[in-house]
Image (cartoon, rainbow, N blue to C red; front, side, top):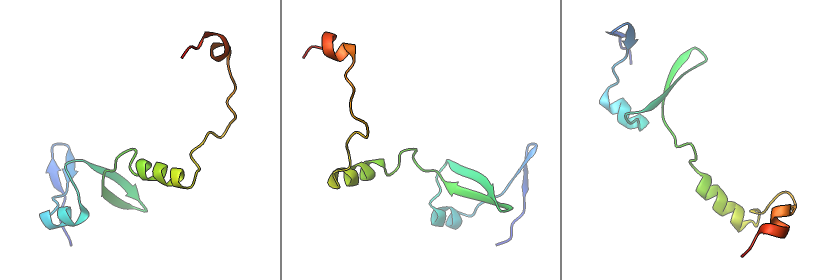
Length: 82
């Protein structure tokens, strides 16, 4: 689909047809970037999207444990009380 750049103050913009917005699943906030000479407009994703599922899968595989052995500190040995 060909379209024209329109003036928006000192900048330029592109009008996106409603059908394209719906097909791409865009909302009011988007990610904008350049890849291989093309302007890319993408829907935003949550910073931690998928973390809950990944944690559940780690738990099912029994991989949700500490990587290092805990080292007790002076606080643990003398000051901590239950």
